[in-house]
Length: 293
Image 1: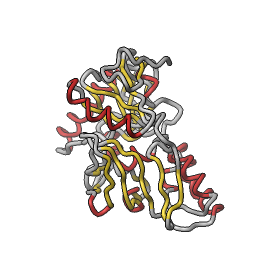
Image 2: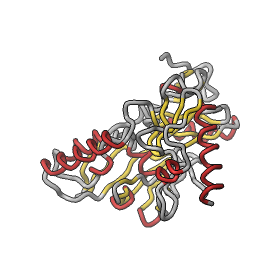
Image 3: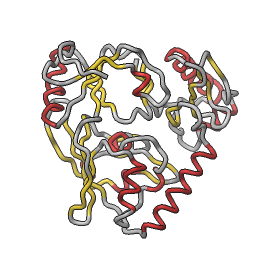
Image 4: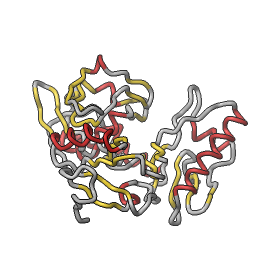
């Protein structure tokens, strides 16, 4: 992975030509994406400020746990990989860099008897992405623990928002920009209890989700009063395959890459599923994953 400054439209920001399938958990993506790798927040600001001048939209890249890459030519892919990586306790609150893996964070904080995030254990995502989408599971959501969010806006301004200034809804936040750090209010819980609870959630995911194949987690949001997986199963999509991609036969709301699947394979299955659920149940499914095309 050689850095290439010359091909970058923003010549002071390191970047490289990337095989995008390596940047998505479903292992799908073109071989010719260009990824920017800012090493500090100043470079990130420069990148965001100058993108409009070259006609590109920013696309933050974290762990790639919910992103399906199609045609990315209109985007500047900006990775959080080399940005500052930290956590610290400040005034009974925890300040964490957005690029922290959530399971690693849970285990680090457990040593300090700080818990509450165990319901996210086992998800291969960074804290920033989870905050941006207001991730949740088992009746909990991360918004409940967010005190402040620091981000670089699309105009390159470094700002901090209190939770009262952010709209959080089901799998949604009003945050726009590149999240750099999150301040969390976390309850005091004994380390042994945190680890036991986190392990139970991880085991539950392993039992109920097709983690043995590359995937992106839940494809669709649950519509009001329904579970997307149940609707898909009733409509015959459980196990349905197109090319190298299929809806899992373990969990119908998971797309899995079972044999060198392509973006078109996945995209067509998503399109067909939405059309069938709308026709059969008069319910419009919304994607929970990011489909970039």
